Length: 166
Image 1 (spheres, rainbow, N blue to C red):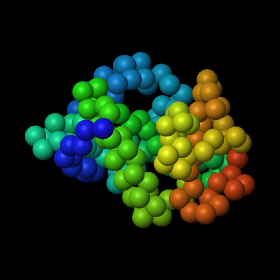
Image 2 (cartoon, helix red, strand yellow; image 1 turned 180 degrees about the vertical axis):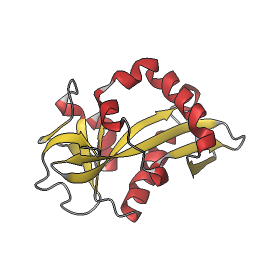
Image 3 (cartoon, helix red, strand yellow; image 1 turned 45 degrees about the vertical axis):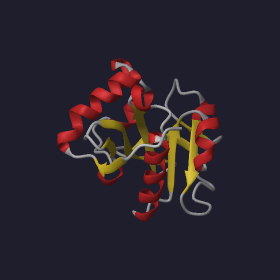
């Protein structure tokens, strides 16, 4: 893994279009059809947990956004999307963004964080399959993962993930 100097910062309104273009590049414009986007519609992301990673020339290398959701009436953070520009993959950009998200979420008082992703990759950050938590279909249940930012934060929390609006 090649190490490069990156600056992590909270996403600003001026970053919005550039971050959206990165998401389109990495996930295709049809990404908004995914079920997780139904949970984000009409919801403001958690500003301090929306991050950009830029190199020393100010070029966007990666970004992540986080959203409030509910599981069984309990609040949780839905991480994602997280994306790294294809020319920067393999440099640890996603890991830096993930580590910062976890630390910042904990410092902001969030107790649980979840995402939809590959368990083998996210296990190294403490994520485990949430067997009793259901994302809107057609999400593969094996990809619904969570991490407790406080001990026992997921104990007894089960059921459907719903928008914070509901």
